[in-house]
Image (cartoon, rainbow, N blue to C red; front, side, top):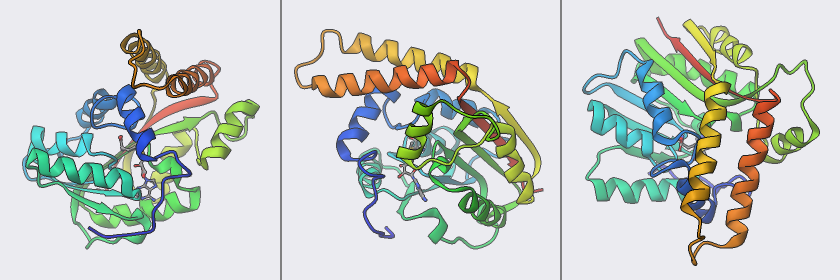
Length: 263
Ligand SMILES: C[S@@+](CC[C@H](N)C(=O)[O-])C[C@H]1O[C@@H](n2cnc3c(N)ncnc32)[C@H](O)[C@@H]1O
């Protein structure tokens, strides 16, 4: 395991928050849509065959990586900057008898030989990278992919940067340190890096339905609230889901899926 300084984005990925996220997103996930989103992204890929080499950028606690290995027989490498999530992913690797290689580190500080992967996947992770860093990463990704390699990204997005967003969403984005793009402008970053056959989808409608379903399930599962589950945690989660639902409804917050090929 490559080691790096401890980073949890000022508590966003503390151990407690990871466990809380997993309750709402589903086992193995700390990002929206949980397993359903993984299946949707996989559906768009052509290279997911046995022994396909997959890199997951921001692999979190391993939900997608384990699925790619068990469902398709892929050889998966996961990279994540946060030690808390890597530790959980590695514990589960041992329990599952998996061979996924989870590496701790900043994806921008790690290098792989050219043409090391057939697929690069990333979910709700590149929002942590500035536009300059995204461009730098995409240039590396194209090198890391084999000739017919594919990249698939799911990420939080926003309305076009030329249009204002409400002050609360603006404050949330600033507080988290996110860099968000409008989905089609995001796709342009892939094209600028040299990716071919780039397709961008604005999947905000599906995202809204997902958020509403996640909130409904969370409320149901916590009614009556289990004794071990603190009121503060319940209220924090409920409030943040209601906020996101509101921002998606007014079109400030969006969700994008981006696809590209090396050749
Ligand atoms: C919202 S979580 C999503 C995790 C996982 N993809 C999932 O769907 O459950 C974002 C992840 O990106 C990781 N991350 C953020 N910046 C990173 C970087 N520069 N290099 C590698 N991982 C990073 C975080 O540590 C976190 O685990």
